[in-house]
Image 1 (cartoon, helix red, strand yellow):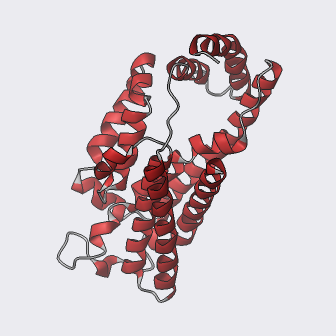
Image 2: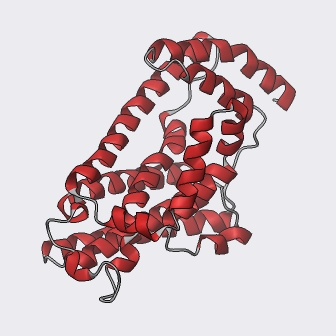
Image 3: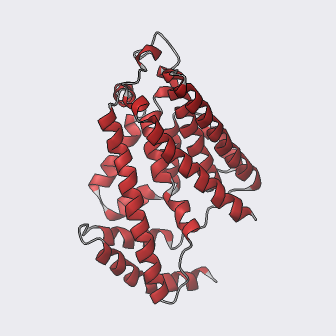
Length: 279
């Protein structure tokens, strides 16, 4: 199908998609405008695809993330909390790197850009700069979204913020986990309403695997944000936060099992989807 023909069909189906999403989420009046803008933005977007080398490396990153999860569980069981938190951070870091590589956000000649421990930086670069979200924010002239993007990018290099995150209590950790749960619930509802609208308009529905490919990034970003400072504070006894502070009362330790469950689920889904896509 030529791009002009494809874009013409997308334009015709867009109103019913927007209405369907609007009806499903009456409490969010700004969502239809956002959905409309997303359609306009991505109608002409080329499909991202990982090359063979990047695909293989992406899978390896995810496999290494799974190994870090196993190490994390063993160390937590032995009450080696600082070391378990370190391996949790490593798992989140490698998971998000594997994801952005497999989704084609980074090509083989760009992989050196991924060699950083600060995994949210990778996610933010991929999300904001490579998927067009900044363009979307500007298109919507949404000052809140634009401010959030700038604030998130600036916060990554702020040690005060990093210490605050590292010392989150259980309530703060659960607040982020609750965001993931609500996001997944909303995503499931959007998927259903989106496919209902596509079917009514004579289009094939989006498969769950294809939809899931687009929704894994948000949980991974959230997990990365609450774990990334632990790559340094768990290792050195002379830092502003030290391994001695990693006790069972620290939020990251108290809810480590819940964090691991989210991470394992996303890693399993991403590997499964990409294995099937390669066949």
